[in-house]
Length: 93
Image 1 (cartoon, rainbow, N blue to C red):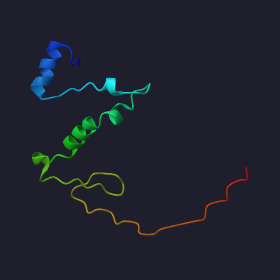
Image 2: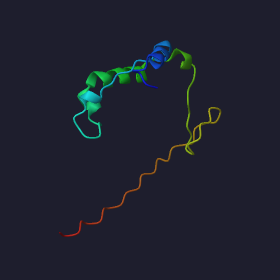
Image 3: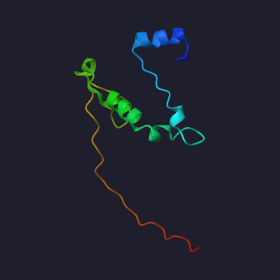
Image 4: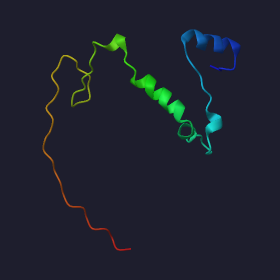
């Protein structure tokens, strides 16, 4: 979708989607710094991600030790054993 196209903008508006072009905030070649230069955008995205979702209020995801989502099964017991071993010395430079 192109938010500059009237047809696409109309569809984005219908869906309630807000598009923010923050590419001008970037100070690096690849554009990764754009978010660091635009903290308001980061806050807005974070607020959307952490907002309560009433439709999911009665849903809880459980992931077992095998990495499978099994809501009816009890979670696998945690391995409480801690193993340690000394690190090898660094080679002389």
